[in-house]
Image (cartoon, rainbow, N blue to C red; front, side, top):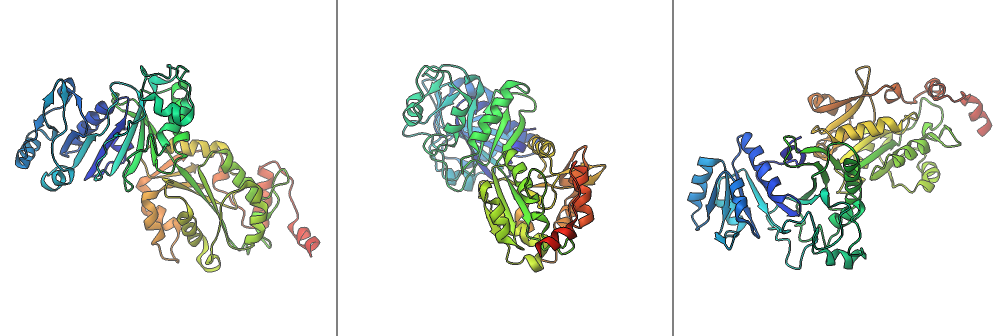
Length: 460
């Protein structure tokens, strides 16, 4: 995918690139992408770039205070690098207030190189770094993964002393993947000076499209996403024609377990499944094994019993006060509102779908990461199933749905936006709503059937 797709660029954004390992190449690549869309892109620096890098720009203009000249250059070239002059081989930042530039220049995008790394692939900031303007809407921290396994020293890393002091990494050791994720998410290192209102999407550059390098990039992404400020991690190589292979996001799950189970005769989420576990335990354990970042279980009917069986799994549980009248939609709203702000997409999981398979979850998340679509759903024999991944951009619309509405109404309205992921199991279509369906699912899972009427009689 393109950089503008991976970073979720919208008109009017101010994008600040920080860190090391290809900031200028990423800035230039993104600028060329958006002018192909018919946009006008203005670029600049808050620190400096090397003079030879001006040759990468379609046009460069020294700012003298004349905003009309900037607009004229944009009319002629569509993509212009604005600077304050050249001194001893360095291109300096223009002398201006960035807010004044936004007010007086008609550009669709402002791209800023807001940090320096002196050619290093990985960095920690010095005291006055990075220089990110408050008007920034998107910060892109960068690392080039050619630094992996290199010595942790000043040749490979900019300001390694700051990292060593904070984490105890020994100078001269080989650089390991988890170190990079830790630094990226650290409030005093990778997240330093990031404006509170800005989105953050990290970019791991110089990643091989296949093989071990990409696996290590995913490990770095998972580590970085444990921080509360990072919205996503793009993995790729910025000089490629398709510079991003995938975007790893912080994914949450909303498990809908509030229903009355009126057709079952007893609470279906608490029915036995395999290995002495209930249905709801089996589902939540599967989600935990799939490494979802945040899991919220929404309860209603027999909430205390569900809390009791899930207590060893240590997942957040929230109560839906409207579960009797609001049905599934009200529970989904409660679950979405309970997820942390760092979660980029939510997986809607039915609490009565016991044959939920790890392979389906993995394929759904992997395909979603490699796509620009904002909704993903499994498909078996051209029929849409569950669970369904929904990007945060859609949550406000779901939260605004009337209680008599349904998730199906929303999905039908966004048919063209849904990424359908073909799977080879009908488990995505089947839930447990009656005793017959429950026993059918047990048979499909290789389990013995149970006589629910005998269970009820024994309980009495």
